[in-house]
Length: 322
Image 1 (cartoon, rainbow, N blue to C red):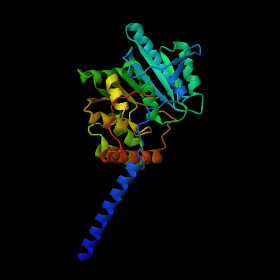
Image 2 (cartoon, rainbow, N blue to C red):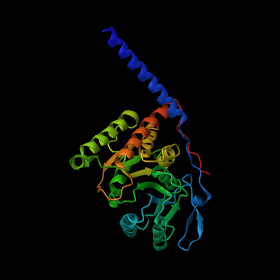
Image 3 (cartoon, rainbow, N blue to C red):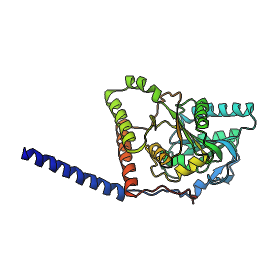
């Protein structure tokens, strides 16, 4: 009996030491919020090839809607998404001439012709409606979304994936979720598209291992970071301008787990969040490598929480970019 007690005590001590080591590693390896831009990232090209300076999220809005599309090596999938989005937005503007919008395609350091493909839409619709922000180096999806958001003019800002997995007209559903939150007086609110209602079907189609990874990720999200949101990873989220400025100014994670930190920050600031079911179809060509991407996201989730606990990361005031 004494021997068992000694083993238990040794295991508890080992776990405590391991946790302390993990805290130290999380603290020492924590990167800071990086809002700096390369000189080339401060400008967009007009339809005639002239350079124009991007505006700032700190400026008052001048459009009803901004759509930010992060794109990495998306020359093949981007046109399908853009054709659908532009058709919807143009029809909406025809029906309601007071509706104004912009689409910002953020090329996240692609090695293919993503920028050239996106610029075709600038030439077709004008730079007032379609702008291309080409990042000098790959930041990751979260970094690309942030840079595009910080360059936007919209009263509300939609994050939409370049693969077009979510039907673009479902923006009306997330708009409805945002309006139901009644974000006044501070105009803080976020509406998240959700695929949670499709989970039963997806489980039936997935392997046992991938299903295990999915549920494990959901548990880590709930345990460490975000409560009450069933699907944090759907790439279809709508922000009020004020909520975008508040959350993206504090964002540290620039890769796949950035959505989780974004919603964690929002909950820390007590920003209301709606979750709205949207149509979603799996599109071939995903950049996610199932095992390693899930492993990286799991590590990021643990580190997000630990870095805020140790004070390595702090919630930031909304400051301007360089």
